[in-house]
Length: 170
Image (cartoon, rainbow, N blue to C red; front, side, top):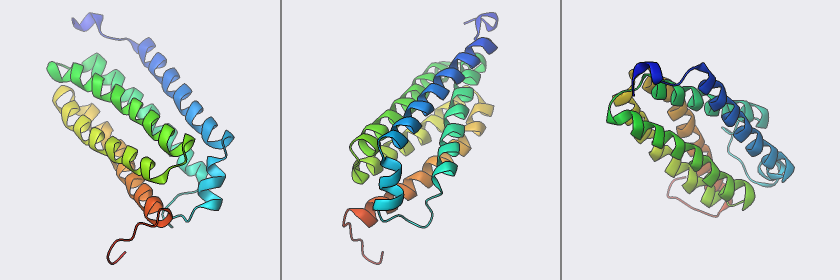
């Protein structure tokens, strides 16, 4: 693709609109289905679980940052890694849907943990491949990877505390 044919700022706006709609759906479902009350009132929760509004804002920031990374890779990426990176980023958005189905809709802390684990593996792979396509985008993916790692830890603790999982020494 010639550099002049690369996506413009309009496509970034479209990516951000889609990402905002997705976060709105996830947040709306979480609040409307009572999953917030379920997590914060009914479940045993780890001390490291942030308040729901902080969790919501960080989820929104992560999703919007992924849209920015998608646009940067799409516009400035090069080689085989550009197309693979775009595909991996789309898969990361779909992984959010998997978590949504398991944790929010089914209210299954174990499924939620495995969905986040899959997302964590996919995020690590995405950071690696994006680094081949466009270095700055890989740097922007690190906060997303750190956030996913944190949520993997929170999800594991939710699963451990609420599913009867007993680990030696924990």
